[in-house]
Length: 410
Ligand code: FE2
Image 1: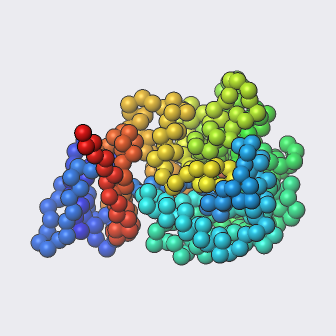
Image 2: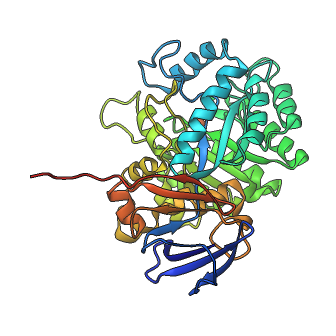
Image 3: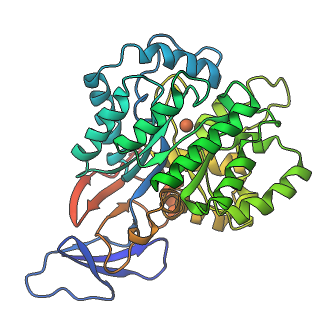
């Protein structure tokens, strides 16, 4: 198949792509061969598929059950989820995850890193997600983080549950240092999780300091262990919202370690602007990690949705466009080129977070995975909330959407 006249990743010049056996065979100026199927993109934007680098699929689509989160805090969310967890069944998880994944797929997402709560003696959500990962692979690649929502040391048998989750097949080890009972537990939990990842050759993704407390300093431990254990870019610090509140002198010192550690960051602009600052009067902190400064230091940052209609976030539709749109505002990355390049937060940067950069992207020899947006470049796509017209996976069309059109009749 030949794809004609694509604007690949905002490039001015038009490019053609030949796909054979599910792989990008040739990229350049190409002519159709006799009887070759060809589609003309008419100068539309072609991107590698979107990547959701942080979401909780097991909690999606449960908002209001058993009650709505009225304080809007992370901690009320955790308490509500703890109650909802008691009535989890495999069928309940299956239905919600499939719905959420289809919402993502329709919006051009083909890779999802999901955190799955493993503070549950039955590990039901994890076991179900491992099956769904196989069942849904025609639509998406799912990466599973064993996420100890209620702590590793602060939850009964937490260490063993984390070990069991890894042995069952989780791709990454998680932790939640800011939720542990004490600072000592926080450090010990990170030591435990990161040594486990090293021994089992797993990735690491820590819910790291998702709190406005400037004394929450799990991040320095994550970065130090990533460096010392030589885990480096296999490690991700998600949220890291306390960094927003750190004093500048401390950040100056911390940046050196962050660079040495080569860790990735995930910011979740929709959810953290909603959850953070809840103990503030005025001024209210935005509660987003220091994205601009991290990027300036060459540190990788991607953006995630985090939650879709669950105890922590009462909205969400599986479109990463809103994540990027709000993310640019709250991080003040609103220069022309910053807006143009912002698709990278949910494509190439996210691929680095997921540790899949070697096989990801529009390159000859890679799996023919791509999406086409109803716009000429990403700036325009953001402004007009452009539809994802097509999503192709291994050379096969898996999504086709109509352009959204509005008609003024007067
Ligand atoms: Fe999260």
